[in-house]
Image 1: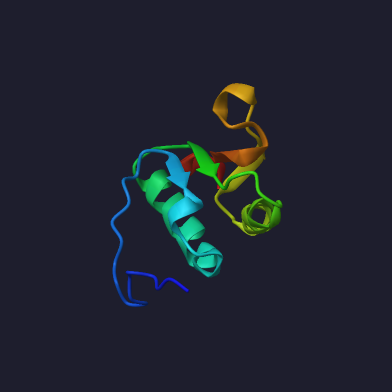
Image 2: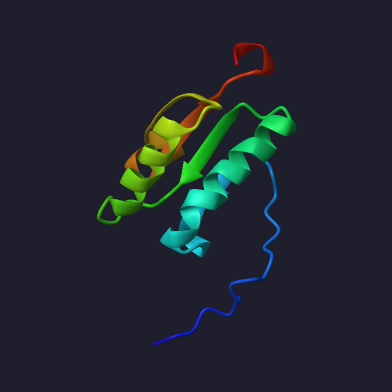
Amino acid sequence: MTENPLAETDVVIIEIDGVLDLHAFSPKDLKTLIPDYLEECRKKGVVDVKIIHGKGSGNVRRSVHALLSRHPLVSGYQQADLNNGSWGATIVRLKRDHEE
């Protein structure tokens, strides 16, 4: 069994560029990671976000979609097209300031 090199209290700095790759994160982190990332994107004026969750069994994708469906800043989301990760990624459209 390998240990996670990051302690529970370690802070991870993520570039806010509209692409969030979840491969480096534990599924238990998603419920805070994704909303925080989307809020930071919105603050920077990024309204189109790609969340890379991988193809796998689909459990992470379903968790991501459940979080997105409840998030107040999300205008909509869909599976990425073939050039952007297909069913291994989700494209999210955030509401603009005036759309709230």
